[in-house]
Length: 333
Image (tube, rainbow, N blue to C red; front, side, top):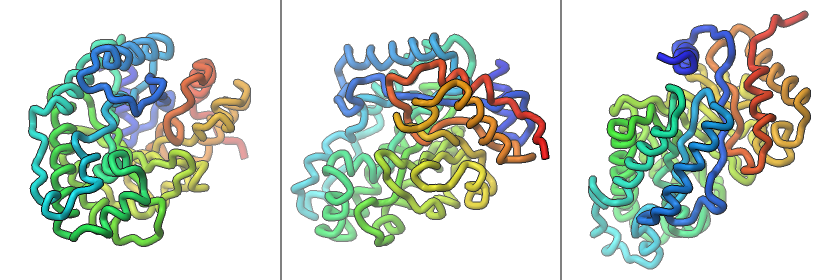
């Protein structure tokens, strides 16, 4: 076992480590929403992006990007479908190209590794894939409210089944250590019904499938573009590591321990161009890293990272500064 893998495993096991593992990542496509299925040039861009990042930064652990595979097949057709049509929707199948290409992608991403590190493949919640297909939160709410409960439940069951198949395969065949699972609350309404009835059960189904396949789960409660979430809604999710937008939610990494008492916590840094990790000096970043660490006291179950993906043009020296500084120092009183 490599030093980096052993260090990460020690954190999972609640043991003290000489340096806190740090993880940062960004998209390798100019537009991650571009469709890569059957597009060899885009798939190559994804793989080569990982190769360059790994070579240049030598990460402690890594989120493997699913750029190009954000669109669940055929879901855009559901925008105008009737209940009867939705009820005829079937699984895309175990060997659908959208699944098999992602398994191959994970294998190719791993082929770029220069050392043995933990890796987590990016997976979106079924509700998020539906948002991409339908046009956003408002459209998802309208979709649910204008169809029968039976047809909506059927769609969530089908999509979660196929995503569960995907995660099991990228872990068992693609050699990912687990998944980085991105989910969030509905942003356009405070009504909890859709979340409790459809989103949460589908989330848990996928996360359980990943664990059943032997994976380690990172739950990413996504605060992209200022999205706000009720962190307590995710407190009992079957995840090993919790990551949320500390800047957006106003809940620091250490404060999150009260909400997530049993999981490893990941994050601490804001991820936008306005935050210290991007615009600060090396000294600023070192100080911020130490502040994150010191706030945990004797708690050893945390990892240094950011709220979400960082800007593509971030100076890797900033990320390296955080990693180098991620050493627990004696706390003076």
